[in-house]
Image (cartoon, rainbow, N blue to C red; front, side, top):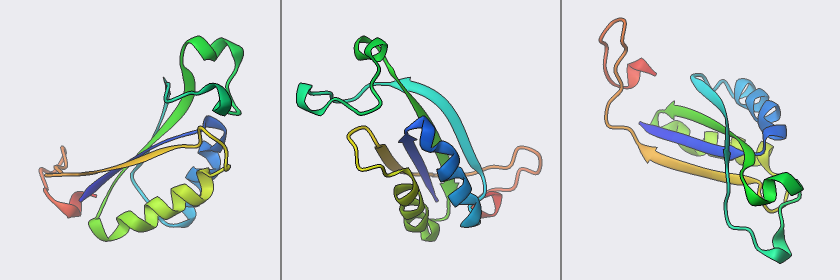
Length: 113
């Protein structure tokens, strides 16, 4: 199992969520968050407001725990629908999940997801 965590522009969140629904991806968590990355004077992100220049930029984090076989399709869906072509589009991170446990039934493994 894998954890796909994507940090994207907030204005792209609904588009990405809709695409994940169409792709029949379930168990999606969407969180509002803030952060900052690498900013250089010649590549200021298009979304950057003056107030955010000294602090944090708004982002949306999407988390999905999935089967290994579904990982590349989920990544492709997120990339295709979060892409604007501008600096600051975001990042996707993929991690291994060692165990999944259903709290109600105590079922374990891939059947939980």
